[in-house]
Length: 138
Picture 1 (tube, rainbow, N blue to C red):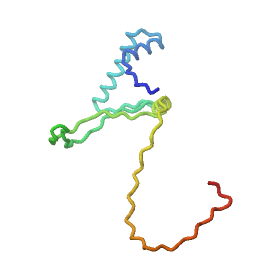
Picture 2 (tube, rainbow, N blue to C red; picture 1 turned 135 degrees about the vertical axis):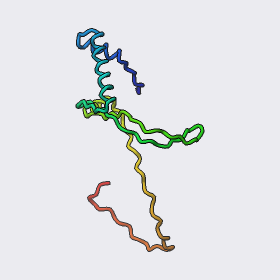
Picture 3 (cartoon, rainbow, N blue to C red; picture 1 turned 90 degrees about the vertical axis):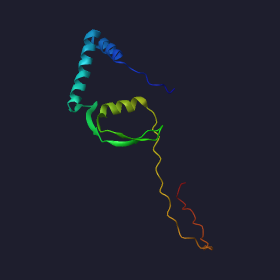
Picture 4 (cartoon, rainbow, N blue to C red; picture 1 turned 45 degrees about the vertical axis):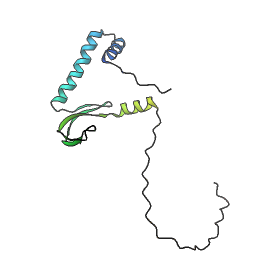
């Protein structure tokens, strides 16, 4: 029962908030839009926005770099730029992880290659088998 995520629009959020608060959709839409506009304005001047338990929006500088066009394999210069970074808050992380309940496959650990051992002697001395301990449980 793995469902594809739905896309929730601003209109859908406005409808839900209007129902829950008893306000008109027009008022709720204006408030939501003002909120989003304020976030954009603050980020544009370089400010950091922190919403406790929700997350943090901040501007980061991305350095210039050289990249490669995958079609032509031509090297291209990518200029430095500013990007918006969002760091998830504790309450959101807990809620999202709790709701999804998707088992996380652990990352495969890299196993170091064994160091070359010196060649073993052709004849090895016989070793007597070790008897199991009587109170050990396998």
